[in-house]
Amino acid sequence: MNKPSNKWLSISLISILLLTIIGIVVTATTYRNTQRHALKMGSDQLVKINDLAINILKLEIETYSLSLEDYASNVFIDDTPLRLTQTEQLEKSLNKRAAAIDGLFLLDTQGNLLSGMALDDRQLTSQTELPAYIKKDRYFAEALEGNVHQNGDSYFEDSRSYLNLYRPITDNENQAIALLVMPLDLEKLYLSTLSSTEDKFNGYTMIKDQDMKVVMHPSSEQISWSIIEDRQRQYPDFDYTDLERLEKTQLANLEGTMSYYSYWWDQPNPPRVLKLAAYEWINIGEARWVVATNLDFYEQNGNALQESMIILGLLGILLAVIFMMAISMRNYARRNQSYMENLRLLERQKLMDERHSLEKSMLQESKLETIGLLTTSIVHDMNNFLTPMIGNLQLMIDEHKDNEELVTDLQEVYHAAQRGQKLSSNVLRFSKVASNTKEKVNITAAVSEAIETMQILIPRTVKLRFEEHTTGFSYFEKEELHVILYNLLTNAYQARQINTEISVLVKQANEYEVKQFQEHSVVYRDKQFALIQITDNGPGIPKEIEDKIFTPFFTTKTASGGTGLGLFIVSSIVKKNDWPLSVKSSSAGTSFVIAIPLLKEDTDS
Image (cartoon, rainbow, N blue to C red; front, side, top):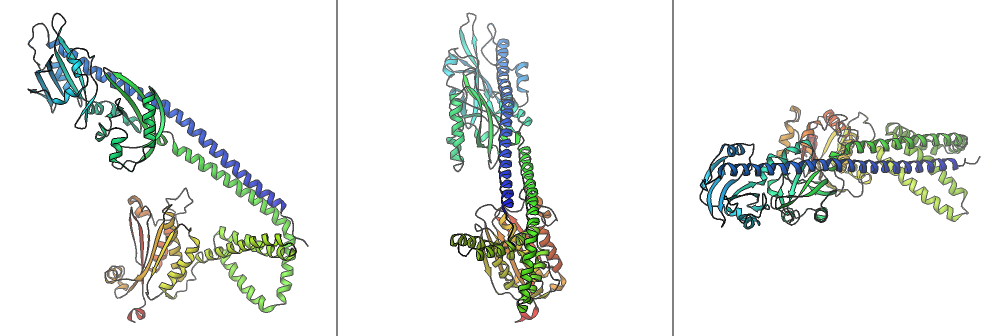
């Protein structure tokens, strides 16, 4: 009886592959469309927020200007002496929350100080000298001639930004006889107005001048910095490619929106994020600024919802693949059943002629059956797939000996299947349940055996260093120690995606360590210990979850399919054997230390 054709199985598998590809393409397209829609919604919202910030800024500066105008109209009339007086209206301005007024100064047309008051702790004190920084306004000379409307341009002094408000004082013939100057501290103005709007969204508004230097920003240390050069000096390792693109775009356009990669500069260690910005150039008096409102693109536009949609899409694809594979394998199994029955009869007859071989095969088959029942479903199924595959490949090689090209291809597949079966066998060793029979075990040899197997299972990109020293013997179930090492090493290389390094140390504990381990239990008072230490260079365990890592089903790897049972199993085996276990973790990595008491006869020797 010939082996049934696997044509329909091949067709089914190809169909499943096509379905999977189509599903992935559809999911990716949906994600891009959702992201594009979110970008448009975020841009529209951000433009409105930026317009609100511009209106607030203009209104606030205009309010200060009107206060200056009102003050001048009420004080400098007719033949009133040219000197400053403190009025009720001025007191109201100073009593505003976080008032931005830095002082009030009266100058003659030559720029000499006639009278001045400086703001100190919201109290005006008389000034006999004009602060030098006021003359840094490039429109100061024009203001003395009465040719500046409302205010000059912004300028900087000691990493602070200022804006001078001007009000000419004229005589009865409308000739300028003096100039009233009110410098505004723009950082105080920002904190009292624009920074309050940041509570409504996850972002901030900033203002830059024509030289692209920061005039107002939530981080005061950024004031007077250029958005490229000065930041590069402070943070030389950051990527400024997108900021250079942002600067060119804003200088070339009066308004617009764009997305770009930047950093949250108001945080101690600025993280790199994708930002969405709306900007517009405005003129206030003689000042020309670009007002830009920025926010975190993903947090504002429902990144969590997009990720959930992707996960649901991939889950649907996976379920479809599993369903189609189950149907295909069931149909193929039915068609192959009669062939397999005949094959088993032939094999049984052959084995009966070789009794000695039969006994060995039955014993081996019994062991394999026991392993298969206790291993995970994935490894169990892989063994079931590979066993008939190897047998059938051998038969096909024997049947087509005259076709050398076909035999070569079949042998390549045959050897690949054999390597897969060998790998499966290694994994099965770690899935064995303890036989509940303790034995005298050489601890160093047991650890070395586990490491040898794990070097086959872990990715080749992981650097695994093993340092072994002579320790001694102890009574326990060797397979349980293998399970502990398997779970700890798996957690270690999964904690870091690239440049993963894991070190395993087995040695006899020193005096200091022995004293600590002996405090674990009264029965360990006179014991010596072997120490097993597994250390990785991962990101460490966050402080907030350190007390939960041994809880069953608690996992931080939900996206990658973590079950939350690995460290729980480690903890359970350690508690069962009453072994000391300690964990040390930091941003540089995590270290697990297990102590195993040694038999006294070994330590005495």
